[in-house]
Amino acid sequence: MPRMLDVSEDVRAEIGDAEADRLLVGDNAPGSYDCTSCRTPGDSEQERTSTVLFVGEETAVLAFAHATCIPSQVVQVAEDQLQGAVRSITGSEPQNPEGLMPEQAVLGITSGLVLIEDDLRPALVVEPTGAIARPGTDGSGGDEFLQLLTEQGFRTAHSLDTLPGVLPGWSVLLAVGQLHAVLQPGSGGGTPVAWWQAHQPLQVTDGWRAAANKSQTVLVFAAPAGSIGQQPREDLLRDALDKAAVNGLLVAAAMPLAGT
View (cartoon, rainbow, N blue to C red):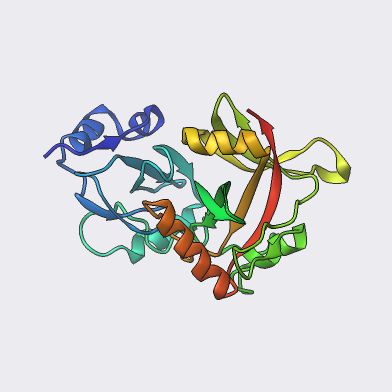
């Protein structure tokens, strides 16, 4: 059965036209999969699905992700990490690089409207695909994602009853109605640099954009891998945020909107 797969030109160039066509008609693509971005189940027969090719020096592993999480792309990975992922895969179809993401974590972002102080606020929820180690370490210290953010000025959100404080120097870049980046201060107070940048601009809803333009502020929440997940509805997203806050797994900041 044909799959609802997105195969980017970069991925097609790596795997070849014949293999790409076989994926699209369903020959070599799974129906169900675990999203390599948010780690929740997906179904390529029912929803748009991105093909993500992890490439090392000698090895390549094809994975799948919700198209709403990340676009189809080629990701360069250290060969030893990729070899470890391949060894951990069971079965005959090595599409899902189990064991890869803790070492090769990336930041996933979900947009949504969150009700706080009787008003719907535009929010971004940041959740990495795996544990985040402190730069320059081997990761033996465990997941330090929240600690790193609090050192940058984010504050622990124990509930979503009140608005988080503004984080100086940070901003959310929206251009032509699409989300491009979350910017942080440059070193020495220089030009802001991207803390997170979209591989390709992300669409936001008309309601989200209108709320952001009205308040000129975006709320940014962040939680460790596995705390929030890819929620299909904003009420479920709010429930997941509330649970993370109660468990002490949520930090937050308000950021001015850059662009329109």
